[in-house]
Image (cartoon, rainbow, N blue to C red; front, side, top):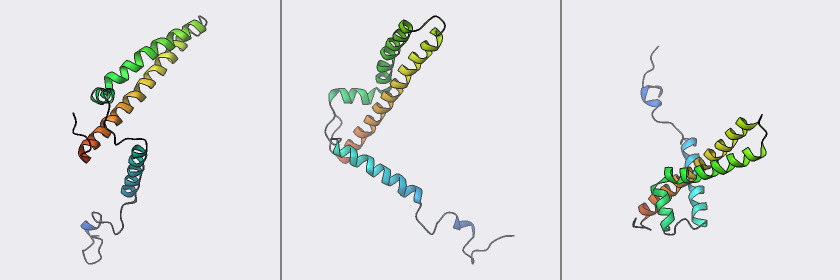
Length: 127
């Protein structure tokens, strides 16, 4: 059973919705709220030298945080644990450090997005 174009439900009906996409508006609202909070926290200031380095090297920044934290927590848990719990505590220490490094790496990636936005708005020239 085929539909013709007189009913308005032909092939092009799926391409043009009679209402605006709620998902697109929701994401735009979330983005606008994020950038409003960023502006309130001073996000439209020129980045410092450290912020520029972190934005250019987010993986290194995450690893530089993850390695010492993993090592220190692993040693801390080794000192507190008995012989039976040793492998589980090692895993907890390493996982905690890696998760913290991942969070810091994602923060560095968001700093890269902020700097890209500053360039696009003409607030910062990228130097």
